[in-house]
Image 1 (tube, one colour):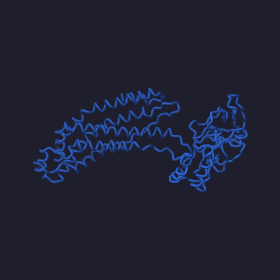
Image 2 (cartoon, helix red, strand yellow):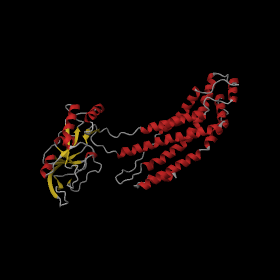
Image 3 (cartoon, helix red, strand yellow):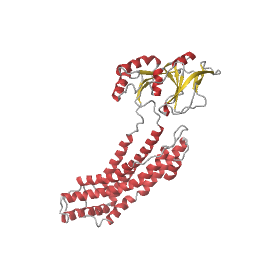
Image 4 (cartoon, helix red, strand yellow):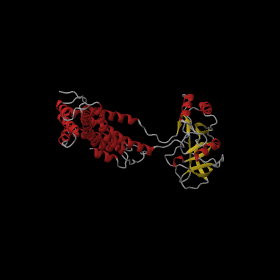
Length: 426
């Protein structure tokens, strides 16, 4: 079931909501059945370890026998160690795959380091600009304008270059309206020529153009569109997602549109805004507007706390599986008689017993967690809309997996050595 769900979801196609949840449910059920199927090994492994411990040092051999002798009590704790370890590992694998998919799907909103201020009303534009200038003195504020308003109207505007289509993942709509400062921000080149009557096609495509067509309807009544041809030049963009057609604000006003501020921009090549400055600006703006600084894709780290809690739970369960501070009388007597009853000998015994219990649970958890995580990551990254990017391959977090498989038994052994059974006994 896990293989079917993972393989089906990894195919290059799009899925509806029902398909998505169906594949996810099938894979989850398969993972649950795998955990149930591994359950008996929580009781068998201590016995296997006890039978193959003959040539190990005395404290380790006694610890293995003691763990095997109390399988009925240790098996539930080993099972919980397995479940917690498997959950943490599966979550780490899923988070890695989802992060890579999200990184591939990420569309920046501006050039790196750009401060964007938006979502304000036309009446508040002056106050927002004044707040920016107070918090960022000397920072040149660029204004991007729009012909749209919040009222329900059906006016239309479209600027196009014949037989050339800009990327659908562009940061901007088909047109970017403003003055020469906006143009030079878009191109990233302060020497870009500007003419208030000439459009500029900013694209990574190798095209030539001396004009663009503007289709518009100011009536909003569905009447035949008016087509106007305006001069244009072509400028190559430094980034494919910066593609757009820059239209001077004067061209729009000459057509008859009433423009309003849509977004205020601080160009990072002229002024870098720190996180502290953004926070102070947010405090000053309050509910007037929203701010955003383009810092690239920022992966979520909340899963680390959940995975860490699962691994801590696995460590605690391993401590319980190892018997905690209790020990049967026979190993204690042997340690006191043969091992001299020293504190170091008892620490070795406690560390070995807890470490072996943790090793049993961690090994089973790794056997379950790796395939569960690898199969679940594909349904969770399957495209469910036609604009979703294709799934990307990813490298499992091998270092994390190795650290958990090795680190949990070592930490459990250290815990057992520090808080092992007392030396007193009959």
